[in-house]
Image (cartoon, rainbow, N blue to C red; front, top):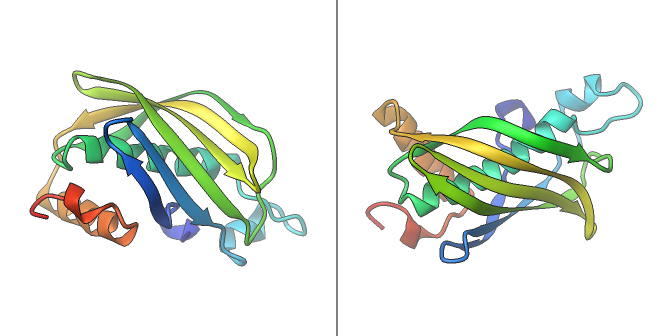
Amino acid sequence: MRLEYFELVDRIAALDLAAGTVVAECVLPERSTVFEGHFPGHPILPGVLMIEAMAQTGGWLVMARLGFQRMAFLASVKEAKMRRFLLPGQALRVEATELHQGSGYAVASARILADGRAVADTEITYRVMEFPNAGLHAAMLKAAARVRVPEALLPDA
């Protein structure tokens, strides 16, 4: 995880297009400027970054199901719940399941687990649209390779 760059997914551990599910593995860094301010002497991952980790995980699923021909942008978060603190160095499992895909949007449920225990969960709506430019499309394909989206799911694979 590179918190400062909003790269919150380290690796896609499982991606099942037929079932509409994805599992990501993430490890919080031991040190980050985020932890210096949140909170001094008691570093924990901000809830907004928990939501972002769930949104990114579900976003990989949505884009993979669309053959990486469209981008998934976070549109709304519904009933997010943070149940536990996440600490520097902690390993996370982030799971998402696509609930619905419509004309121009997708909805997924997502949750974070640490040490097998529920940490956070939410329902996320994505605005699905054409990539605004070729540079973003190329950057997302490069990021997909970095997080190990299966090569067979990437265009021109």
